Length: 265
Image (tube, rainbow, N blue to C red; front, side, top):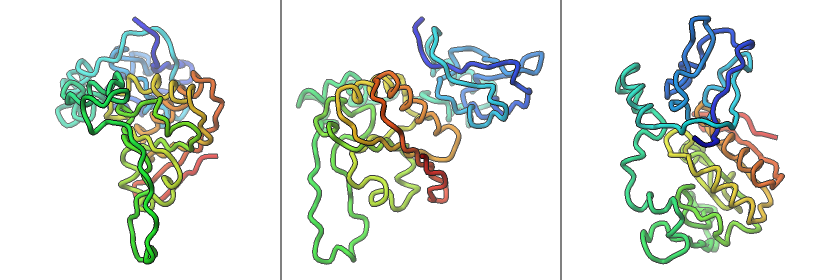
């Protein structure tokens, strides 16, 4: 048993509405005999806090404490048995066991330190192309300036993160916001992650390491409006706190219609 992030319920504030029990795709929350929310089993809670946004009374919060680790496979079976196959497909980390060798080895950052292994995860900086004479007529110019970008694959010690402006974006934002490259990515280094479907176990530690050992001038977090995506903010906030970086987050919330609906302060 080790310390990890997990949901905590303040019973006096819980009004028994049950919204959290349906917002949690992992089925970790249920109502007890007094119509109060409780954890069905701690191993079903991934600690990302998708339930926080739907609680009308503020009875839920994410805390760090001693607990058994989140068990994706046990959670998958739990949801399969109680909600069916379609719901089970959305359980966080249920497919973790099928990751390919490149992804598995990258979690120890071996490839970021060595030219051996999966070439697709080798750290490299990308030089921006000079705009052509008719650039005004060319759409879709990439503003990506480094590789890799997926949080499982990046090295927190990659040199391009030092003295940078950093954008941490949920996977879906680039597909939803048509001007992602021009409005969000231009001039920034990029990390992408999905707080819902990724195995996020190493994410806080990796971001903590990155913020400890690099000077990051600004940090923007872009996420989707859907509740499960708010987990990305919790991950980044925890990493900032652990690193002692004292950096302010600019949060951008993207609607499913492709509009920026709630720019953070």
